[in-house]
Image 1 (spheres, rainbow, N blue to C red):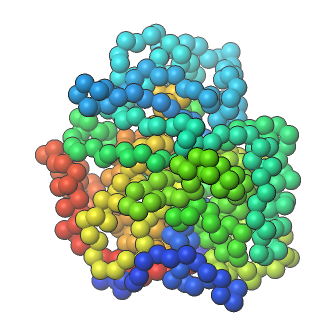
Image 2 (tube, rainbow, N blue to C red):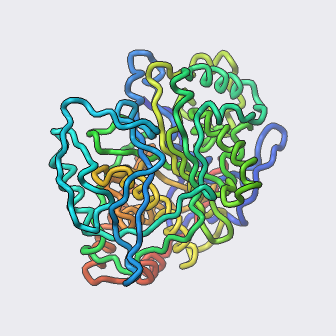
Image 3 (tube, one colour):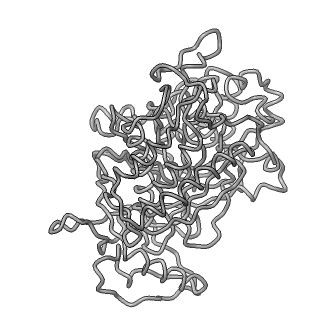
Length: 490
């Protein structure tokens, strides 16, 4: 099914650049200034489901998986951090729900211990604590052996930069009043689908405030090659191909997290909050809690320091078909309540749980990308991807981290689509991501992705045989002379 027929921004070196710094959106006569939109409102949106999901016979194709958090320790003697033997804490993975929960893992009778205790200090957790399904045992064993070759850095996740609560506790936090009736209808019907059991589910908000330095050498002996996949589609929230895959979905965020969920806007960011209405409750609760813990502040970057936000275990409760873009972005306010009823689907039996990565791209620049802009963009993607892998493998070293992303920041923020594809592919490999699924909406977006992948494979991977440092890779990208494009106005 198709969901909207919105063009992705053309990625050309000679495209007309956007001007000015990013600024907040302001309401003007029921609309928002086109040059004051955030990158989350990009037209190459990947947040919705396709039209076939609006019919009952297809409701089961909207499943997805989720993952969990981790802890690692660092080798202080040589300043080269390694995977260590660490148990997961706070949240265990509930196999039946495929989400994070605080219950013990309920293994079936078919599960059996597969590995004996290993003394290798590079493993992230004790192998004696891992139980595998028979069909996946060899895959999991091979993954642990492969991951043990690679180094990892410690990420601080504690009470100062994270908040965990039940769905019921988040629901107790009042959210803003919606500015248009259609969004109010979506929210009310979606929340009603939550069961008493759903409300006991625990969610977690994590803000990455500490620096995570990029690796300085990208030798193949240090960093494994990511399995890159492409889909010319929006996010489908599909079930994993096996029991060890844990999926994350990128939110094309603004600096201010979910800041326009209550407005008439309906682009990538707002659509994702509409589908996952608990995100609005998380935001409002964080706004109150940040007075006690400032590091919880719902900002995805401060100055030149990216502070991406990860949210786990959020129920996906509904979807709205934008009719090929007819009701996308600013046009959503034109949708009548009758049209909404025809294009809205509430998930009751088929609701799934999502893990979200909220990261903001730079935007509204002009001219050629500077080396500082390249570094910031790469650091943002690397930090976000690495944290997802860290959390995934912290629960179980055998789990594969799958990142679902797309043309991040290529709509309202005017980034070059080839540049963004190249950056995210590099970041995925630097952070040791197992699988990167790159979603594009149409052939134009696919062509830009393929160009980025070509540059990644032909040049970057070849450069790794020479063990270049990060600066050499940045200089290589800089010499390609990518140029900022024009904001698409959504």
